[in-house]
Image 1 (cartoon, rainbow, N blue to C red):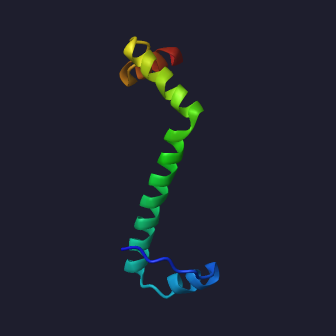
Image 2: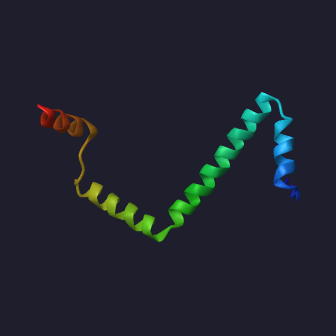
Length: 80
């Protein structure tokens, strides 16, 4: 069930200020989840990002990648 309320941002801040710490943590978790979902949707819908992701996938499938262990090894050998 969704309820749409029209309240000012200041009123919302005031309402949040009256919450106890546990309720505020729950609200933060909810907001972070919603933000992540919205940002992820926007990210995956961007044409440039999609092209970049496809290019990276193609490179990976072609074996054009370095494992983390190889990266660490090559980085350590460069310091010597």
